[in-house]
Structure formats: C-alpha cells, structure tokens
Amino acid sequence: MSISTDTAVKSAPPPPSNRGADSPDQVQKFNDAVGRSTSSNNGSQQSQGSSASAPIMLARRPPSPAQTAQQALTCAPPTAQQKARAFVDPALRDVAAGKKELAKSAKGTDVGKMQEALQTAGYKLPKYGADGKFGDETAKALKKFQTDHCLKDTGRLDKQTMEQLSIASTKFPEYGKLFADGKLNTTIGVGFDEGNSHKDQTKEVIAGLSKRGYTELDPNTAATDKAMAERFKAAGIDPAAAKADGLQYFTKTFKHDGKDVTSVVKLITPDTPQAKDKFAKAMGESEMVIYSGHGRYGSGPDFDPITSAKGNFVIGKPYEAGHVALNKGQTDLQKTAMTKDYQLMLFDACTTNYYLDDLRRVPGKDSKNLDLVVSTGTLSWSTGTTDVLRMLDGVTAGESINQIKSDLEDINRKPGSKGQLWKVDGFNDN
Image (cartoon, rainbow, N blue to C red; front, top):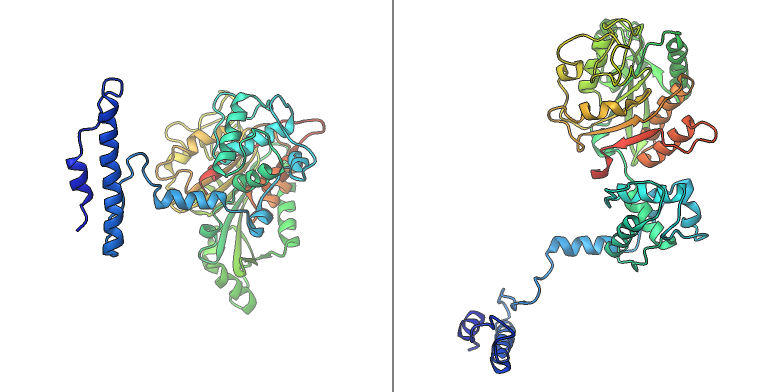
C-alpha cells in the first residue's frame, strides 16, 4: 500500500526556518521528504486509478479553470468574425495594414487613438490618458496588453498587436437586450430653438424616417385600414392610446442575426402636447432615447424658450447660473422612475457630457443597464438631423459604438479641428 501524502508530509522533518542558519544536510532531508510525498501520491493515483486526489504543488498553485479558459480565449488566433466586426480608427489603418509601427516617443493623432483603444480594452492610463504622446505609461500598458494576448512584449504597436487591440477595443450596444422581444422602442426628442430651427429639424427627421422605409402610424385609419391595424399590432401600440397621447409613431422591420425586429420610433417635439412630461416618461421607459436640441448649459433637454421653466427636463444644475429658468426642488431626472432594463441614450446638444454625473447617480442604473453617448463641445443645429439618423441607422444595422462615434465625429468636426466632440460611456463592460 502506498504511503498517503498527509502521512509523508507529517513525518517529514520540519521545514528550514532560516536558510542561512540551517545546515545543508537539514535542507536536503526536508527536500527529500517532500519529493517522496509527491512521488508516493503519484504512485497512489496510478495504482488506484479512480483516486480524485492530486499531487501537492508546494511551489505554485495550479491555474483555475476560469484562468485557463481566459488564457485560451486571449491566446487563440482571431476568428474571421472577430476580424470582420473589429473597428480600426482611420488614424490607425496604416498600422493595421503593416505600413507603419508606433513606438515610444511617437506623437500625434494615431498615438492618441491607440491610447483610447487601450483604455477601451481595459488598460488604464491614469496619469496622462489619451494625450497623444507615447511615453512610459503608454509603453507599460501596451506591453501588458501584448503579454495578456500572448504576443511578444515589444512595447511597439505593430500589425499583429493592432489586430488584437482592434478586436479587444471594439464595443457594441447590448443588442441582445435591445432586441430580445423582437422590438426596438426608440424615442426621438427635438428640443426648442428660439430661432425656430426645431421646425425644420422636425420636418427633416420625418423625411429621413420615410426615406429609410418607416411608415407613420395613423390611429384615425386603424379601424378601417387592415394594413395599418397590423402595423399597430406589430408595434404593440393601441391605436386609441396613440390618438389620445398626440404623439407621432413610425415603424419599420429590419433584420438582426437573421431575425425580424420591429423598430418603433416615437417623436416628441415642442409642438407635442405636454412635451416635457412625455419625454420624462420616455426617459423612464424607452429602450433607446435620442435627444437633439439645446443642452441649456448642461441642465438638460428643453422643449420651450430658455426663459420658461415649463418645458425643461432638468437633469442637473447648469454649469453657468443665470441663463436658464429652472424650477426649484428635485430635478425632473430625480422624479423619474427609471426602468431597470437596459437603455441606450444619445444627447445631441452642446456639452451634454455635463449630464453624465447626474445620470450615473440614478438609483438602479449603472454601466450595465445604461450606455450613453454625449457631446464634449459645441454642436450646430445644422448637423442635428444627421446625428439623430446616424445613431438610429447604426443601431438598426448592429454596428459597433466605435463606428457610430467615429461617424458622429466626422459629421460634426470643423475643418482643421482635431479635437474629440463625442464621448461614449458605459460600453466597456458590454
């Protein structure tokens, strides 16, 4: 009968407590005993066959199944699907094509985009961030990425590293959650402009929806028009309720992963009765919320003149006091009961990044059930409709948030400008 591991270890001489004080003979006796315990345990497994015990590994704990699976995942060669879905920023396409590499001391837009990709992939740059300068912090993060993905840790962004980085940094809205019930419920809100630009934008949004194959639902004909009644049914909307709330509804069907999804768009404008209240309801319930208008100094969407507090959906305090008329007490966001389900939101107005802190404090909402696209600078009314429809197109096409953000940057970038006008938040854990 083989000696058990426990018996061998218990009968071994005590381990050397101080290698400098113990004699070589004591050290050798201890090591020999440990060696016998391991070989005895191996022999026991071989003779018994069914034993579930494993040899003691005193020097190193074996990797857990989760660690082994993660290593296999990151070290496996990219699949064709991963390559096809990966986003490569235009500034890094020469690296992706093998035409150039980025190394320490490099500067420029391409370095900044690499740094953004590293951060999106989960490799933090806490001191300098995406500053466009390839320094020690960036080199350390890139080497760690290379090591984690079983690449040679050269600290250089080459073609092979770029391929893995583009895959790791490409993030998507939670399409599985958005389309789980076979529907995508979207609210588009067009805010008030003192120069009446909202009237033109409303017309442009409706024309854009029509061009994309959306049909406006007419509650007045649902009782007599069978096709219209079917559209209401597919959208899950009661014609009588639609007539009562005075909103405009548009629907179309698109494909996602080979399955039909009904896109339902609800349009709220300054001409909508009780526009602010209906937008508040949409903030609490809609799967996707898109607002385009004035940001009102970071205070929130607004459906009437800046001098009136009645049409403001207040998210937080304005970053400059005295410009916007606001009601006292709780903000409208604080008074809104938000769904615990996943939501995706775009705020297409000036400096809506000021909304982030307040939105992230909403009870029950976090980065797992609320993803946000906000602006970091001044936007023009002339691009509002294009922004709205680009977001809608990107989501119905199942695109990455990287691609959507890149296109929004292109739409709003002024000639010669290199600054970033958009920020995405919450997608890293998708």
